[in-house]
Image 1 (cartoon, rainbow, N blue to C red):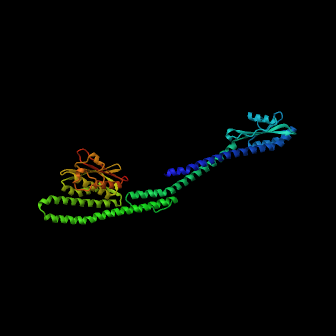
Image 2: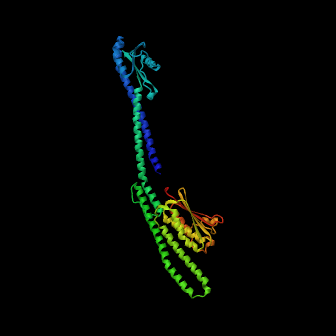
Image 3: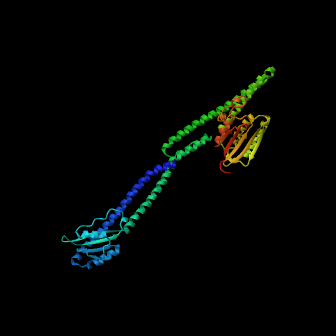
Length: 456
Protein backbone atom coordinates (compact mmCIF):
# COMPACT_ATOMS: atom_id res chain seq x y z
CA UNK A 1 0.00 0.00 0.00
CA UNK A 2 2.84 2.37 0.83
CA UNK A 3 4.46 1.87 -2.59
CA UNK A 4 1.13 2.48 -4.36
CA UNK A 5 0.50 5.63 -2.34
CA UNK A 6 3.97 7.00 -3.11
CA UNK A 7 3.47 6.19 -6.80
CA UNK A 8 0.11 7.95 -6.90
CA UNK A 9 1.63 10.99 -5.18
CA UNK A 10 4.85 11.20 -7.21
CA UNK A 11 3.75 10.18 -10.72
CA UNK A 12 1.76 13.38 -11.52
CA UNK A 13 4.42 15.59 -9.93
CA UNK A 14 7.20 13.92 -11.91
CA UNK A 15 5.24 14.29 -15.16
CA UNK A 16 4.66 17.97 -14.46
CA UNK A 17 8.32 18.43 -13.51
CA UNK A 18 9.53 16.72 -16.70
CA UNK A 19 7.15 18.75 -18.85
CA UNK A 20 8.17 22.07 -17.28
CA UNK A 21 11.85 21.09 -17.31
CA UNK A 22 11.72 20.15 -20.98
CA UNK A 23 9.94 23.38 -21.89
CA UNK A 24 12.44 25.43 -19.89
CA UNK A 25 15.41 23.61 -21.48
CA UNK A 26 14.12 24.32 -24.97
CA UNK A 27 13.36 27.96 -24.13
CA UNK A 28 16.82 28.41 -22.57
CA UNK A 29 18.50 26.97 -25.68
CA UNK A 30 16.50 29.22 -27.98
CA UNK A 31 17.24 32.25 -25.80
CA UNK A 32 20.99 31.61 -25.93
CA UNK A 33 20.80 31.13 -29.71
CA UNK A 34 18.94 34.40 -30.19
CA UNK A 35 21.38 36.18 -27.94
CA UNK A 36 24.29 34.74 -29.94
CA UNK A 37 22.78 35.77 -33.30
CA UNK A 38 21.89 39.24 -32.01
CA UNK A 39 25.45 39.77 -30.81
CA UNK A 40 26.81 38.57 -34.16
CA UNK A 41 24.53 40.95 -36.07
CA UNK A 42 25.48 43.78 -33.73
CA UNK A 43 29.17 43.16 -34.44
CA UNK A 44 28.42 43.08 -38.14
CA UNK A 45 26.59 46.42 -37.98
CA UNK A 46 29.59 47.92 -36.18
CA UNK A 47 31.89 47.09 -39.11
CA UNK A 48 29.53 48.38 -41.83
CA UNK A 49 30.56 52.07 -41.43
CA UNK A 50 34.29 51.33 -41.55
CA UNK A 51 33.79 48.96 -44.50
CA UNK A 52 31.87 51.68 -46.43
CA UNK A 53 34.75 54.14 -46.08
CA UNK A 54 37.35 51.52 -47.00
CA UNK A 55 35.39 50.43 -50.07
CA UNK A 56 34.98 54.04 -51.20
CA UNK A 57 38.72 54.62 -51.03
CA UNK A 58 39.58 51.06 -52.02
CA UNK A 59 41.96 50.96 -49.05
CA UNK A 60 41.82 47.65 -47.08
CA UNK A 61 44.36 48.98 -44.60
CA UNK A 62 41.67 51.03 -42.88
CA UNK A 63 40.06 47.77 -41.66
CA UNK A 64 42.96 45.42 -41.29
CA UNK A 65 44.06 46.02 -37.70
CA UNK A 66 40.58 46.28 -36.28
CA UNK A 67 39.26 43.17 -38.06
CA UNK A 68 42.32 41.08 -37.21
CA UNK A 69 41.95 42.00 -33.56
CA UNK A 70 38.27 40.99 -33.67
CA UNK A 71 39.11 37.69 -35.40
CA UNK A 72 41.77 36.84 -32.81
CA UNK A 73 39.53 37.82 -29.87
CA UNK A 74 36.44 35.83 -30.92
CA UNK A 75 38.02 33.18 -33.12
CA UNK A 76 35.93 34.51 -36.01
CA UNK A 77 36.42 34.63 -39.75
CA UNK A 78 35.63 38.15 -40.98
CA UNK A 79 35.90 39.35 -44.58
CA UNK A 80 34.89 42.28 -46.80
CA UNK A 81 33.94 41.75 -50.45
CA UNK A 82 33.90 44.50 -53.12
CA UNK A 83 31.16 44.83 -55.71
CA UNK A 84 32.84 42.25 -57.96
CA UNK A 85 32.92 39.65 -55.20
CA UNK A 86 36.66 39.81 -54.53
CA UNK A 87 37.43 39.32 -50.81
CA UNK A 88 39.46 41.57 -48.63
CA UNK A 89 40.11 38.65 -46.36
CA UNK A 90 41.90 38.98 -43.10
CA UNK A 91 42.11 35.22 -42.59
CA UNK A 92 42.70 32.36 -45.03
CA UNK A 93 41.49 34.28 -48.10
CA UNK A 94 38.48 32.18 -49.15
CA UNK A 95 34.85 31.56 -48.31
CA UNK A 96 34.61 28.49 -46.09
CA UNK A 97 31.37 26.89 -47.28
CA UNK A 98 28.93 26.86 -50.18
CA UNK A 99 26.17 28.29 -47.97
CA UNK A 100 28.45 31.22 -47.01
CA UNK A 101 29.19 31.86 -50.72
CA UNK A 102 25.47 31.81 -51.47
CA UNK A 103 24.79 34.32 -48.69
CA UNK A 104 27.60 36.54 -49.99
CA UNK A 105 26.21 36.51 -53.54
CA UNK A 106 22.76 37.33 -52.14
CA UNK A 107 24.20 40.30 -50.21
CA UNK A 108 26.03 41.63 -53.30
CA UNK A 109 22.71 41.59 -55.12
CA UNK A 110 21.33 43.97 -52.49
CA UNK A 111 19.44 41.57 -50.22
CA UNK A 112 20.12 40.87 -46.58
CA UNK A 113 21.02 37.32 -45.58
CA UNK A 114 18.41 35.22 -43.82
CA UNK A 115 18.60 34.65 -40.10
CA UNK A 116 19.92 31.35 -38.80
CA UNK A 117 17.28 28.58 -38.87
CA UNK A 118 15.59 27.69 -35.61
CA UNK A 119 17.56 24.50 -34.93
CA UNK A 120 19.69 23.32 -32.04
CA UNK A 121 23.31 24.52 -32.24
CA UNK A 122 24.85 21.06 -32.70
CA UNK A 123 23.00 20.82 -36.02
CA UNK A 124 25.61 23.22 -37.54
CA UNK A 125 29.29 23.77 -36.89
CA UNK A 126 29.33 27.54 -37.52
CA UNK A 127 27.08 30.55 -38.05
CA UNK A 128 27.56 33.01 -40.95
CA UNK A 129 25.89 36.41 -41.36
CA UNK A 130 26.40 38.74 -44.34
CA UNK A 131 25.26 42.35 -44.80
CA UNK A 132 25.46 44.43 -48.00
CA UNK A 133 27.29 47.78 -47.90
CA UNK A 134 25.30 50.60 -49.55
CA UNK A 135 26.60 53.95 -50.81
CA UNK A 136 24.00 56.38 -52.15
CA UNK A 137 21.57 53.46 -52.57
CA UNK A 138 24.04 51.33 -54.52
CA UNK A 139 25.69 48.13 -53.34
CA UNK A 140 29.44 48.65 -53.20
CA UNK A 141 30.33 45.48 -51.28
CA UNK A 142 29.43 43.26 -48.35
CA UNK A 143 30.72 42.34 -44.89
CA UNK A 144 30.69 38.69 -43.73
CA UNK A 145 31.31 37.30 -40.22
CA UNK A 146 31.54 33.55 -39.53
CA UNK A 147 31.61 32.37 -35.90
CA UNK A 148 32.05 28.86 -34.48
CA UNK A 149 29.07 27.48 -32.52
CA UNK A 150 31.25 25.55 -30.04
CA UNK A 151 30.95 28.21 -27.34
CA UNK A 152 27.17 28.39 -27.81
CA UNK A 153 26.91 24.61 -27.51
CA UNK A 154 28.97 24.66 -24.31
CA UNK A 155 26.76 27.37 -22.81
CA UNK A 156 23.58 25.46 -23.66
CA UNK A 157 24.96 22.19 -22.28
CA UNK A 158 26.07 23.99 -19.13
CA UNK A 159 22.59 25.46 -18.69
CA UNK A 160 21.03 22.06 -19.27
CA UNK A 161 23.43 20.40 -16.83
CA UNK A 162 22.40 22.84 -14.12
CA UNK A 163 18.76 22.17 -14.98
CA UNK A 164 19.27 18.39 -14.77
CA UNK A 165 21.06 18.73 -11.42
CA UNK A 166 18.25 20.88 -10.04
CA UNK A 167 15.66 18.45 -11.42
CA UNK A 168 17.39 15.48 -9.78
CA UNK A 169 17.54 17.41 -6.51
CA UNK A 170 13.85 18.29 -6.83
CA UNK A 171 12.98 14.63 -7.54
CA UNK A 172 14.93 13.51 -4.47
CA UNK A 173 13.11 16.09 -2.37
CA UNK A 174 9.76 14.94 -3.80
CA UNK A 175 10.62 11.29 -3.09
CA UNK A 176 11.59 12.16 0.49
CA UNK A 177 8.42 14.20 0.97
CA UNK A 178 6.37 11.41 -0.63
CA UNK A 179 7.86 8.77 1.68
CA UNK A 180 7.31 10.91 4.76
CA UNK A 181 3.77 11.79 3.69
CA UNK A 182 2.97 8.13 2.91
CA UNK A 183 4.31 7.16 6.34
CA UNK A 184 2.25 9.89 7.97
CA UNK A 185 -0.91 8.83 6.12
CA UNK A 186 -0.39 5.10 6.70
CA UNK A 187 0.75 5.33 10.32
CA UNK A 188 -2.83 4.95 11.65
CA UNK A 189 -3.33 1.95 9.35
CA UNK A 190 -0.20 0.26 10.71
CA UNK A 191 -1.27 0.91 14.30
CA UNK A 192 -4.73 -0.41 13.45
CA UNK A 193 -3.22 -3.54 11.90
CA UNK A 194 -0.99 -4.10 14.95
CA UNK A 195 -3.94 -3.65 17.32
CA UNK A 196 -6.10 -6.11 15.35
CA UNK A 197 -3.26 -8.65 15.31
CA UNK A 198 -2.88 -8.25 19.09
CA UNK A 199 -6.60 -8.80 19.62
CA UNK A 200 -6.45 -11.84 17.36
CA UNK A 201 -3.74 -13.30 19.63
CA UNK A 202 -5.86 -12.78 22.73
CA UNK A 203 -4.70 -9.33 23.89
CA UNK A 204 -8.21 -7.97 24.26
CA UNK A 205 -6.97 -4.75 25.89
CA UNK A 206 -5.07 -3.65 22.76
CA UNK A 207 -6.02 -0.10 21.79
CA UNK A 208 -4.74 2.73 19.58
CA UNK A 209 -3.73 5.63 21.79
CA UNK A 210 -1.70 7.69 19.30
CA UNK A 211 -3.96 9.81 17.08
CA UNK A 212 -1.24 11.25 14.79
CA UNK A 213 -1.97 11.14 11.07
CA UNK A 214 -4.62 12.65 8.82
CA UNK A 215 -7.70 14.03 10.59
CA UNK A 216 -9.81 11.59 8.59
CA UNK A 217 -8.08 8.69 10.39
CA UNK A 218 -9.09 10.02 13.82
CA UNK A 219 -12.69 8.87 13.47
CA UNK A 220 -11.57 5.45 12.28
CA UNK A 221 -9.34 5.09 15.37
CA UNK A 222 -12.13 6.18 17.70
CA UNK A 223 -14.58 3.74 16.10
CA UNK A 224 -12.02 0.92 16.36
CA UNK A 225 -11.31 1.62 20.03
CA UNK A 226 -15.03 1.72 20.75
CA UNK A 227 -15.55 -1.55 18.89
CA UNK A 228 -12.63 -3.16 20.74
CA UNK A 229 -14.10 -2.04 24.07
CA UNK A 230 -17.43 -3.58 23.16
CA UNK A 231 -15.82 -6.84 21.99
CA UNK A 232 -13.70 -7.05 25.13
CA UNK A 233 -16.80 -6.52 27.25
CA UNK A 234 -18.77 -9.18 25.39
CA UNK A 235 -15.94 -11.72 25.57
CA UNK A 236 -15.29 -10.93 29.22
CA UNK A 237 -18.96 -11.34 30.10
CA UNK A 238 -19.09 -14.59 28.16
CA UNK A 239 -16.02 -15.96 29.91
CA UNK A 240 -17.25 -14.86 33.30
CA UNK A 241 -20.60 -16.52 32.62
CA UNK A 242 -18.94 -19.81 31.63
CA UNK A 243 -16.61 -19.68 34.63
CA UNK A 244 -19.38 -18.82 37.06
CA UNK A 245 -21.83 -21.31 35.59
CA UNK A 246 -19.36 -24.17 35.55
CA UNK A 247 -18.18 -23.33 39.06
CA UNK A 248 -21.65 -22.88 40.52
CA UNK A 249 -22.96 -26.08 38.94
CA UNK A 250 -20.27 -28.17 40.62
CA UNK A 251 -21.79 -27.68 44.08
CA UNK A 252 -25.31 -28.89 43.25
CA UNK A 253 -23.80 -31.66 41.16
CA UNK A 254 -21.70 -32.77 44.12
CA UNK A 255 -24.77 -32.70 46.37
CA UNK A 256 -26.73 -34.78 43.87
CA UNK A 257 -23.95 -37.36 43.69
CA UNK A 258 -23.79 -37.58 47.50
CA UNK A 259 -27.55 -38.05 47.72
CA UNK A 260 -27.35 -40.65 44.99
CA UNK A 261 -24.82 -42.63 47.00
CA UNK A 262 -27.00 -42.31 50.08
CA UNK A 263 -30.05 -43.52 48.18
CA UNK A 264 -28.10 -46.35 46.59
CA UNK A 265 -27.32 -47.77 50.01
CA UNK A 266 -31.04 -48.24 50.70
CA UNK A 267 -32.05 -49.71 47.35
CA UNK A 268 -32.25 -53.32 46.31
CA UNK A 269 -29.58 -54.80 44.10
CA UNK A 270 -31.99 -54.78 41.17
CA UNK A 271 -31.44 -51.02 41.03
CA UNK A 272 -27.65 -51.30 40.77
CA UNK A 273 -27.60 -50.93 37.00
CA UNK A 274 -29.79 -47.85 37.12
CA UNK A 275 -27.68 -46.33 39.87
CA UNK A 276 -24.51 -46.99 37.90
CA UNK A 277 -25.96 -45.27 34.84
CA UNK A 278 -26.83 -42.23 36.96
CA UNK A 279 -23.29 -42.25 38.37
CA UNK A 280 -21.89 -42.37 34.83
CA UNK A 281 -24.05 -39.40 33.83
CA UNK A 282 -22.87 -37.53 36.91
CA UNK A 283 -19.24 -38.20 36.07
CA UNK A 284 -19.91 -37.12 32.49
CA UNK A 285 -21.47 -33.88 33.75
CA UNK A 286 -18.44 -33.29 36.00
CA UNK A 287 -16.15 -33.88 33.01
CA UNK A 288 -18.14 -31.38 30.93
CA UNK A 289 -17.87 -28.78 33.70
CA UNK A 290 -14.10 -29.34 33.93
CA UNK A 291 -13.81 -28.92 30.17
CA UNK A 292 -15.85 -25.72 30.25
CA UNK A 293 -13.55 -24.31 32.93
CA UNK A 294 -10.46 -25.25 30.96
CA UNK A 295 -11.89 -23.84 27.72
CA UNK A 296 -12.82 -20.53 29.36
CA UNK A 297 -9.32 -20.19 30.81
CA UNK A 298 -7.81 -21.00 27.43
CA UNK A 299 -9.85 -18.23 25.75
CA UNK A 300 -8.69 -15.61 28.27
CA UNK A 301 -5.05 -16.60 28.42
CA UNK A 302 -2.20 -14.17 27.72
CA UNK A 303 0.40 -15.90 25.57
CA UNK A 304 3.94 -15.69 26.84
CA UNK A 305 6.43 -16.69 24.17
CA UNK A 306 9.83 -17.92 25.30
CA UNK A 307 12.40 -20.54 24.25
CA UNK A 308 10.95 -23.97 25.07
CA UNK A 309 12.54 -27.43 25.00
CA UNK A 310 9.59 -29.37 23.64
CA UNK A 311 11.29 -32.71 24.25
CA UNK A 312 11.52 -31.97 27.98
CA UNK A 313 8.00 -30.49 28.15
CA UNK A 314 6.43 -33.48 26.38
CA UNK A 315 8.36 -35.91 28.59
CA UNK A 316 6.90 -34.21 31.68
CA UNK A 317 3.34 -34.49 30.37
CA UNK A 318 3.77 -38.11 29.31
CA UNK A 319 4.97 -39.02 32.81
CA UNK A 320 1.94 -37.20 34.26
CA UNK A 321 -0.45 -39.23 32.08
CA UNK A 322 1.12 -42.65 32.64
CA UNK A 323 -0.89 -43.41 35.77
CA UNK A 324 -4.19 -42.50 34.10
CA UNK A 325 -3.21 -44.62 31.10
CA UNK A 326 -2.20 -47.53 33.31
CA UNK A 327 -5.63 -47.57 34.93
CA UNK A 328 -7.03 -48.31 31.47
CA UNK A 329 -4.25 -50.81 30.74
CA UNK A 330 -2.76 -48.49 28.09
CA UNK A 331 0.99 -47.98 27.69
CA UNK A 332 2.47 -44.58 26.77
CA UNK A 333 5.71 -44.72 24.78
CA UNK A 334 7.79 -41.58 24.16
CA UNK A 335 10.10 -41.28 21.14
CA UNK A 336 12.28 -38.13 21.11
CA UNK A 337 14.00 -37.71 17.74
CA UNK A 338 16.65 -35.11 18.45
CA UNK A 339 16.45 -31.60 19.88
CA UNK A 340 13.16 -29.76 19.49
CA UNK A 341 13.79 -26.20 20.60
CA UNK A 342 11.36 -23.46 19.64
CA UNK A 343 10.05 -20.07 20.74
CA UNK A 344 6.44 -20.56 21.80
CA UNK A 345 4.00 -20.58 24.72
CA UNK A 346 4.78 -23.63 26.84
CA UNK A 347 1.48 -23.53 28.74
CA UNK A 348 -0.55 -23.52 25.54
CA UNK A 349 1.45 -26.40 24.06
CA UNK A 350 1.08 -28.46 27.23
CA UNK A 351 -2.67 -27.79 27.38
CA UNK A 352 -3.09 -28.85 23.74
CA UNK A 353 -1.03 -31.99 24.34
CA UNK A 354 -3.10 -32.83 27.45
CA UNK A 355 -6.29 -32.59 25.39
CA UNK A 356 -4.86 -34.91 22.71
CA UNK A 357 -3.48 -37.42 25.24
CA UNK A 358 -6.81 -37.45 27.07
CA UNK A 359 -8.55 -38.25 23.81
CA UNK A 360 -6.02 -40.96 22.88
CA UNK A 361 -6.12 -42.72 26.27
CA UNK A 362 -9.91 -42.55 26.32
CA UNK A 363 -10.39 -44.33 22.99
CA UNK A 364 -7.36 -46.65 23.05
CA UNK A 365 -8.34 -50.29 23.68
CA UNK A 366 -7.04 -52.10 26.74
CA UNK A 367 -3.60 -53.60 26.28
CA UNK A 368 -2.70 -51.22 23.43
CA UNK A 369 0.09 -48.67 23.06
CA UNK A 370 -0.14 -44.90 22.55
CA UNK A 371 3.01 -43.59 20.92
CA UNK A 372 4.18 -39.99 21.38
CA UNK A 373 6.84 -38.68 18.97
CA UNK A 374 8.73 -35.37 19.22
CA UNK A 375 10.87 -34.03 16.38
CA UNK A 376 11.92 -30.85 14.61
CA UNK A 377 11.88 -30.45 10.82
CA UNK A 378 13.30 -27.15 9.62
CA UNK A 379 11.31 -24.29 11.12
CA UNK A 380 8.53 -26.56 12.45
CA UNK A 381 8.37 -28.73 15.57
CA UNK A 382 6.02 -31.72 15.56
CA UNK A 383 4.41 -33.63 18.42
CA UNK A 384 2.57 -36.70 17.11
CA UNK A 385 0.23 -38.86 19.22
CA UNK A 386 -0.66 -42.22 17.64
CA UNK A 387 -3.19 -44.54 19.29
CA UNK A 388 -4.42 -47.99 18.31
CA UNK A 389 -8.09 -47.23 18.69
CA UNK A 390 -10.86 -47.64 16.11
CA UNK A 391 -9.88 -44.47 14.25
CA UNK A 392 -12.35 -42.39 12.23
CA UNK A 393 -14.07 -42.61 8.90
CA UNK A 394 -12.71 -40.24 6.20
CA UNK A 395 -15.91 -38.17 6.25
CA UNK A 396 -15.56 -37.66 10.01
CA UNK A 397 -12.01 -36.31 9.92
CA UNK A 398 -13.19 -32.86 8.80
CA UNK A 399 -15.63 -32.58 11.73
CA UNK A 400 -13.52 -34.04 14.52
CA UNK A 401 -12.20 -30.60 15.58
CA UNK A 402 -15.69 -29.07 15.82
CA UNK A 403 -16.75 -28.24 19.35
CA UNK A 404 -19.04 -30.81 20.98
CA UNK A 405 -18.87 -33.10 17.95
CA UNK A 406 -18.66 -36.82 18.71
CA UNK A 407 -18.71 -39.85 16.48
CA UNK A 408 -22.10 -41.62 16.47
CA UNK A 409 -20.48 -44.85 17.71
CA UNK A 410 -18.89 -43.05 20.71
CA UNK A 411 -21.95 -41.36 22.14
CA UNK A 412 -21.85 -43.61 25.21
CA UNK A 413 -18.16 -42.90 25.92
CA UNK A 414 -17.56 -40.38 28.69
CA UNK A 415 -16.46 -37.02 27.32
CA UNK A 416 -17.65 -33.67 26.01
CA UNK A 417 -16.31 -33.57 22.44
CA UNK A 418 -14.12 -30.54 23.15
CA UNK A 419 -10.62 -32.03 23.43
CA UNK A 420 -9.44 -31.69 19.84
CA UNK A 421 -11.37 -28.42 19.43
CA UNK A 422 -9.40 -26.95 22.35
CA UNK A 423 -6.12 -28.23 20.93
CA UNK A 424 -6.95 -26.69 17.54
CA UNK A 425 -7.76 -23.29 19.07
CA UNK A 426 -4.57 -23.32 21.15
CA UNK A 427 -2.35 -24.19 18.18
CA UNK A 428 -4.06 -21.56 16.00
CA UNK A 429 -3.20 -18.94 18.62
CA UNK A 430 0.46 -19.99 18.34
CA UNK A 431 0.44 -19.82 14.55
CA UNK A 432 0.47 -23.62 14.29
CA UNK A 433 -2.06 -26.24 13.34
CA UNK A 434 -3.46 -29.65 14.25
CA UNK A 435 -3.29 -32.35 11.61
CA UNK A 436 -5.42 -35.45 12.03
CA UNK A 437 -5.10 -38.66 10.06
CA UNK A 438 -6.63 -42.09 10.41
CA UNK A 439 -4.41 -44.67 8.68
CA UNK A 440 -6.12 -47.96 7.84
CA UNK A 441 -6.09 -50.33 10.85
CA UNK A 442 -3.79 -47.95 12.77
CA UNK A 443 -6.10 -45.88 14.95
CA UNK A 444 -5.93 -42.10 14.98
CA UNK A 445 -2.80 -39.98 14.53
CA UNK A 446 -2.94 -36.39 15.82
CA UNK A 447 0.04 -34.14 15.00
CA UNK A 448 0.64 -30.79 16.67
CA UNK A 449 2.68 -28.57 14.32
CA UNK A 450 4.28 -25.63 16.11
CA UNK A 451 6.36 -22.90 14.40
CA UNK A 452 9.81 -22.88 15.91
CA UNK A 453 10.19 -19.12 15.61
CA UNK A 454 13.76 -17.85 15.17
CA UNK A 455 16.35 -20.59 14.53
CA UNK A 456 17.78 -21.69 17.87
